[in-house]
Length: 120
Length: 109
Image (cartoon, rainbow over all chains, first blue to last red; front, side, top):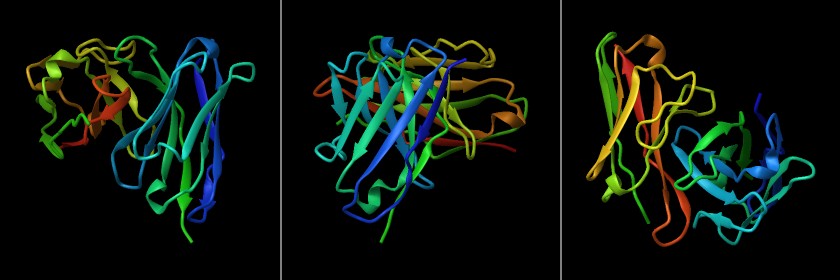
């Protein structure tokens, strides 16, 4: 059974940093691209970042480019999101999602999410 | 950047058909995926590549895509179908990025 479990969320002050983790199991993690998707309270889904299976290709939404860094450790079956210079508008539930890794990819498995709150 | 527009809400009586549109410039040339999200839960993929259904998704869910509009159709709507629905594409035109639609709340009357 595919499982994705996020952790690392919490309350952080504006300008602060936070590192999210996503532990994967039930599939060959090193064969799949992975993504972070977020959802602000009461709002829609927003794609944040994507990383290919070998970390060769990395993409970011304009809203986080230069502040967030996605990474992965295939030996540990883990995905990460380093978030720096956090703003109030980064407040959201952050989901990790497995990528179909085909052309025009879709997200076939999602974690339950971890809440990040940016507030003074 | 590529924009996907959905109606904020759709209301449908049980047993009837709900149609949720997703508008985008020449979206018919892209592959569209659809997700269902119930309150407090993570999204679930219900349609991929315009009209394919993942295992476990009822045949009542179907999709189409042409021109500037993609459509998710839910036939014989049940109370359990009440949820938010999002369309999604991957935009490779200028930079590679995922794009979600604005979301549609489906209410079962």
